[in-house]
Image 1 (tube, rainbow, N blue to C red):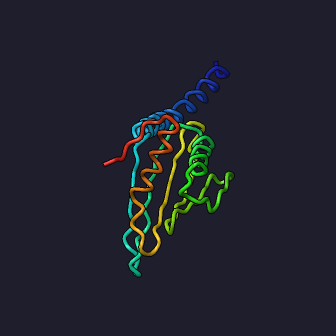
Image 2 (spheres, rainbow, N blue to C red; image 1 turned 90 degrees about the vertical axis):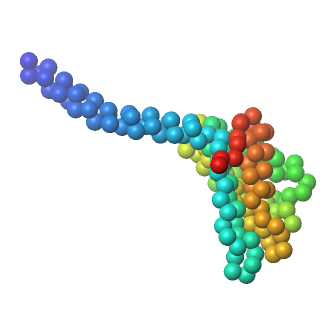
Image 3 (cartoon, helix red, strand yellow; image 1 turned 90 degrees about the horizontal axis):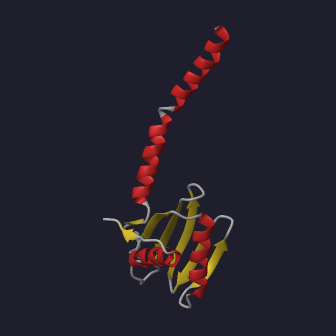
Length: 153
C-alpha cells in the first residue's frame, strides 16, 4: 500500500504545481491573439536642436521571424527610393535611408509562430516626421505576407 501512495502523492504534487501555470499561459495566448495584427505607434518629441524625434511602430504577427525579415528585406531591395545602409540577417535587422530619413527594422521571435516587427524612423534636419512612413512600412510587410493589420487606437 505504501508503494502505491508515494507515486500517487508525487503525481498529485506535480499536478498541483502545474495547475497555476496553465491559466496564466492560457491568458498569455489570449492576449497575444488579441494583439496580433494591431499596429502600435509612438512618437518621441522634437530634439533640443529642433529636429524631429524618433517614430516607432510595432506589430505582432503570427509568422516565423525569418519569414518576416526576408519579406521586409525583399521589399526594401525592390523599392528604388530607399538605400539599404545595413543588413544583419542573424540579428534580423535592416537599416534603410530615404533622403535624410533613416529607419531601422528589427524582427524579434517570441516563439516559432509569433514574432514582433519593430520599425524606428528618424528624420534629418529639415525633413518632416517619419511617423506615417514607419506605419506604412509595417502595413506593406503585413500586406505582402497576407496578414491583416490595422493601426491601434
